[in-house]
Each structure stands twice: as C-alpha cells, then as structure tokens.
Image (cartoon, rainbow, N blue to C red; front, top):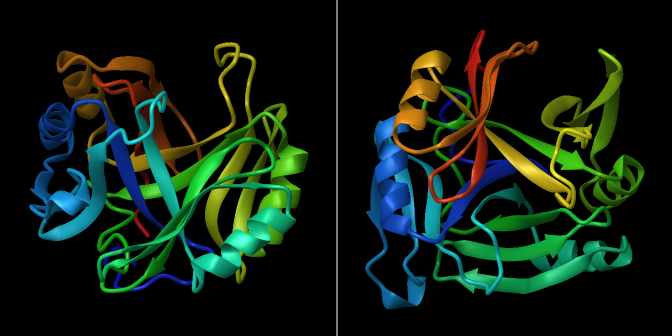
Length: 258
C-alpha cells in the first residue's frame, strides 16, 4: 500500500536528512524528486522541515545538529514506546545516543547505536504517524543495513525489535531480509571490500523513481557523485549516489510498486 496513515511497531516509518546546507538540499531534491519543502516556523524546531510529494509528507530535512556528524539520511523505526525500546537497546548491548524526547505534539523520538555500530532512530507516533506515501516514485521504498558485523547486527536487531531474519544466497553473498509478521520490512548485507576503509556500519535508504537513467543523469548534472549508475536487482534497477551536500542514498526503478 503506497498511502499510509499508520505503521506497525518494528517497521521503518520515516526518513530524514541531516544536511550542512538545508536550502541547497531542498533545491537538489526538489529537482530530482519533484519535492517541495514545508519548513517549521517555530525556532524550537531547529530549522527542521518536511519534504512533500503530491500533497503527502514523504521525508524530513534539517541541519546537522551534532558536531562531527556527517551528512546522512536517517532511518526511523516505529515503536509503541520509545522508553521501552531504549531499555531493550541497553540490554542488547547498544548505546542510547539520545534519550526519548517529545517533539511538540508530533511524537517522541530517540537515537541509538546498534551492537554492530550502526546508528538508527525510533519514532513513537503522536500527531505525526510517519511517511504518508511510500513504495512509489518520489517516496522511500526500502531501508538496508550495510554492516561490518552481520552476526552482531542480527543478535541486536532481533532482540530490540523482534525481527526475524530470512537469509538468501545471492551471487557469492548472503542477503538478509528482516521480517515482521512474515512481511519483509528491511534488508541487511555485509559490507563489501569496495567500500572505503573505515566506512562504518550504516543504514541506507532507497527512493523509488520512475526513470532511473533520467534521475541519475539529473543528479549528476546538479553536482551529485555517482557511485553506481545502474545495477540489476530482483526489485528493479538501482543506482547509488552522494548528493552535493555529502549524503549517500540509493534510487531504484521498481519493476512493480507495493
């Protein structure tokens, strides 16, 4: 289902961009995805805003808040109780980077680091339920953990969220799908030697596009660095890029929408 008004606990429900230049990011993503941005006027929001596509909220954007933090697309997993999730993170060997914090009447967020070193956030919904549009061009459609330690990641995320790993052998590697109630909600892959030395375990976000070649070409013309211009996968052809402000993302032309 592409239009969403709620998310089951344990399912990725939101993504947002931490950018060193919010206005430049708004301009870039407006060009490649057709997004507009609605920025929050309240100074207490810290310059945060939301990307809108076809009248639906699809992602967030805001300035980098912590010194030394790189530009990054952040992944949020839905939870019924952020404080309970924080306790699970601690018990599973993870780190609480930011304790649960109420965000106006929108909901409660928290930031954690998993046992494999990956950072992620959780969202306990209030008025804001998460992305209102997913799995179609102009919206995020997949989140994938790229990890240096699949065993540690499996132990950690199954403990925290109750995810079930489903492993598939693919061309000399193992791909893991994370399942919630037998539904595939995210993926995991061991980091390949092609990544630069020192690249930490991280969550990657995929955005669906109608025309991969046109999107990659447009992104490159706007200053993005193209890491992969086209690669086949079971869901469709995808590419990987680094936006002009330094955040990595993937784009995919799905063979069919969900």
